Length: 272
Ligand SMILES: NC(=O)c1ccc[n+]([C@@H]2O[C@H](COP(=O)([O-])OP(=O)(O)OC[C@H]3O[C@@H](n4cnc5c(N)ncnc54)[C@H](OP(=O)(O)O)[C@@H]3O)[C@@H](O)[C@H]2O)c1
Image (cartoon, rainbow, N blue to C red; front, side, top):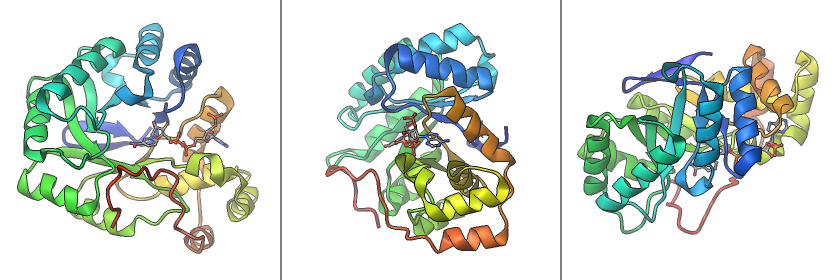
C-alpha cells in the first residue's frame, strides 16, 4: 500500500471509513479489513465505535508501527480542557498509548483557534498523537491555521468524490503540501449505480466503485477512506488500486456534474 508522507507520518492512501458501524458489526468489519491488509482506520469520538475498533485492533495484533489510526474530537469539545478529556477517552477506548492522527472533526462558530491548536500541538509534543490535522475546514479557516497559527497540520479531511468539485481547496492544499483525505469517496454508495462509471468499469473489468476510488487515488496528495462493512466490498475497494484509468476515462469523469454534496450540516462552514 502506497503512503502519503506528511508531517512525519506515513498515511496509507486507502483507509477504512467506519461511520455508522458500531458494536460487534464494527468489530467484525475492522477485523476483516485488517486481515485483508487495510492499515489505515478512520474513526471519531462521535461515531461511538472506538471501543469496537480497539477490540478489533487488539484481536488482530497487527504490529503497531504498521497501523495508522485516525480519530477526531467533536466540535462541542473544542475548549482546551474538553479536547484533553475527549482525547483521553478516545485513547482509552481504542486501547492505544498513542494515535497517529488527531483531527478537529468540524469547525465550530465560537471556537478559539489559537487555544485549540496550542492544546493539539501539546498533545503531539507529549507523544500522545503523532500528528494533528483538521476536517471540514474551508480555505479561510485553513489560512488562519496554516499561515497565522502555523500549526503543523498533516491533512484536511473533506468530502471529495467524482461528483463533487474540490479544485480550489485542492489548489490551496497542494500549495502548502497538505494532503486531502477524501471522505464519502463513494458518494455514500451513490457512485455504484452511476452509468458513466459503470461503462468505464465494464471496459476494464472493474466496478463503478473501483473507478471512483482509483480516480481519487490517481491524484497527487489525495487519500481516501471508503466505508465498507462487508469483506467483499472491502476487497473490491482494495483491488481498485490495481486499476489503470486512461485519458478517455478521465475525460468522461471530468464531464460528470460536480455539485453533489452528501454531507452539509447546518453547523458546517461556508464551503467557498
Ligand atoms: N470528517 C467528516 O466529517 C466525515 C464525514 C463523513 C464521513 N467521514 C469518514 O469517511 C468515511 C466514508 O464516508 P461514508 O461512509 O459516509 O461514505 P462512502 O464511503 O462514500 O460510502 C459508503 C457506502 O458505500 C458502500 N460501499 C462500500 N464499498 C462499496 C463497493 N465496492 N461497491 C458498492 N458500494 C460500496 C457501503 O456499503 P455498506 O453499507 O455495505 O458498508 C456504504 O453504504 C466514513 O465512514 C467516515 O470514516 C468523515
